[in-house]
Image (tube, rainbow, N blue to C red; front, side, top):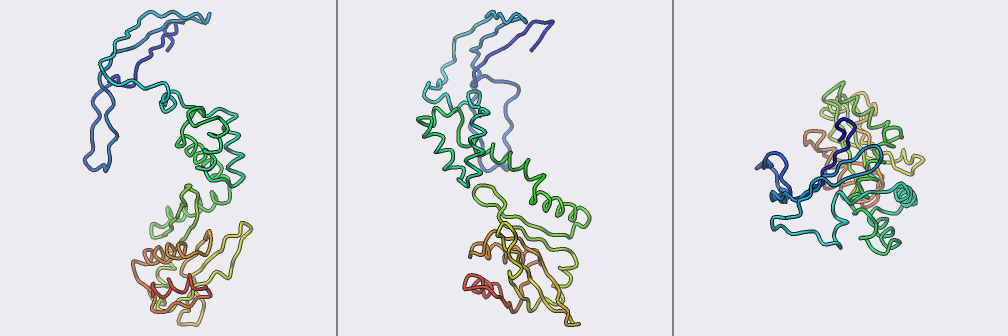
Length: 269
């Protein structure tokens, strides 16, 4: 901090107590361990714009707590940083389709071990996640999410759900508006499920649950943008669709799917 043109910096250990004792919420499943022990070891330096610094106070005595070994200092938050060069490399690795774990392992091998990288895997994953969040705001998925959020704000009965994969990337999206819910409550005994509207330019199938009303007109009960047509995707989709419809399940499902879709369609019905 600057005080009258004088730069004052304090360096303390992680075990120092700052402020009041952390309040523990009984509803939290797992608490972080308390690492503060009241250690008063510190160093204070003063400096001016001449870039000359002076140590004005130094307390070397620790109160018996364990010290971090040099081989583990790369785990300390204060020692972790992703450089601009590393960020660009992470971007290149990610754009090549390499998963975060494999990408971090690759960078670790290039640096001769994870202790030489300068950051941990969580930092790597958080960087990619934050970058995707920024890009998502201006990308196609960002436009979809913005639209769904606006629809829900306009009508609280509007339902949508998102499933992410192990890398926190959006995999599947389903949305159901209020009119779809009303139509399904009246005409949802027999539904047809298909992905014949596939696929968009990214190769993702667009799936629909549809039915027929009393005027023999086709009505749509939902809209879903899927990552693939695997068993796990259909399980999530059918379960989420039933949840959107307050648990009501159709008596009969007609589908153009293979054994994956048919088996779970039978279970749902």
